[in-house]
Each structure stands twice: as C-alpha cells, then as structure tokens.
Image 1: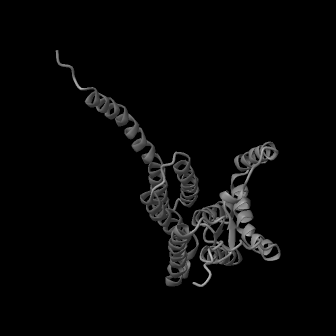
Image 2 (image 1 turned 90 degrees about the horizontal axis):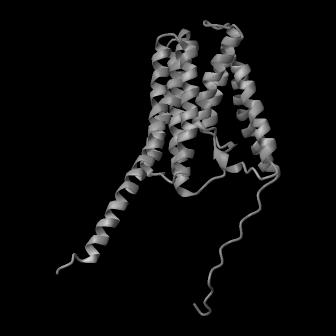
Image 3 (image 1 turned 180 degrees about the vertical axis):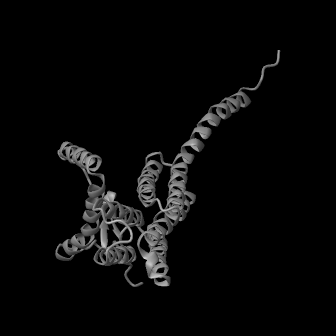
Length: 273
C-alpha cells in the first residue's frame, strides 16, 4: 500500500495557513492608505466649497482632513504597516489638503480684492507647504528627529481654517474691515514662512507620559475636548495659536538649555598604522 509523502502534505498545510495571514496583512496595509485617501477627498471637497462661497464648510473640511492625517501615520506605526509608498502618498495628499486647499480658501475669502497680488500671496502658502514636506521627507530618511523643523503643514493648514472660523465667530464677515484684513493677511504669511523656517516645534514623539502622569494627562485631555465641543471656534483657534507659539518658546528653551553632546563613537586604534 502506497502512502502520500508527508513533506508535500506539510507544505500544503503551511501554504493554506499562510494565505489568510497574508490577506490580513494586506488588509491592514490598506487601512492607513484609506485614511490618507479620506484626507485627500476632504481637501478636494474643501476647495469645492471655497469656490462655492461656503467658507465655513471649507474650513471644517480642512480641519477634518487634519484629524485623518494625524490618524493614518499612528495607525500605520501601530499595525507595523508603514511603507515608502504610504509616506509618499501621504505627502502628496498633504500638499493638496493643507497647501492648496487652505490657500484657495484664504484667497476666495480675503485676498480676492487685492487682484493679482492676492493669488501671489496665496501661492506663497502652497510653495512653502510643498517645500516643508519635501524637506521633512529628506530629513526623515537621514535620522529620526524628536522635534519638527518648522511648523508642520497639517497644523498650519488647519490653523488657516480655525482662523476663518474665529473671525466669522467675531461677526467680521467678508469683505473684512481694513484692520482685520491686515491682521489675518499677516497671520497667513507668517504661517507660510514658519513652515519653511528652522524653528523647532514639538512632535508627538517628544511627549512621554509616565504612569504617574497618565491620570492628569487624561483629565487635561478631557477638559480640552469639552472646551472644543462647547466653544468650537475660539477653542480651535486658541489651540492652534498655542501650538504656533510653542515653536519660539521651544527654541528659546533649547537655546538656554542645550542638550548634552553625544560622545563620539569609539574607534579601534592600530599602532603603527
């Protein structure tokens, strides 16, 4: 009586068990990219709303895209599904959602009366966002950084939307009064230049919550969420301005409290060499 060889049967069983695992891995790999796609769609929808004159909806779409952008990278790292494709796709989506969409929103809302000078100011924001993302990708390949160099594009674009919400909450609708127009215009240009500056900004990696700090951190987080839900417009704007100011404060702190220099790596010394 002939029996089937044991080794082929084992190989078949291994193949059968590996297939569902590889399919699950492929599905997990798709999740961060789907969230990035949602961020990209929200950025495009923001541009559609800006062209239609629905500026509050356009600002809300940019802020919602920012939430998606903050989730996709964390989910990718948590599920070990990071990839070079995901990094490049995320950067392209960020140029649209936090470069082009905020610039178009601000142009349609406040810069149109300036004529050709208006779209030049708006294009400055787009160029700075693209340069910021390109620099970030290059630096990310070189070394892992604790602080961002320059204001992150996601937060700069979201702050443009929060600024519009806040100004409309103050009942200063378009066309803006002269003093208000100058103030928001200076803020818009400042955000663009901060993205390409060398000012350090804190990243999530620099925040370490220990066991003793877990409960106070939870309480503060809940309070911030409640304030944002109760006072949406001023709360979003205050949080954005707080992060904007955290860069110069961090730069001063690092200037007065420089990090200790790392010891040089030991090298083998060969006498007579």
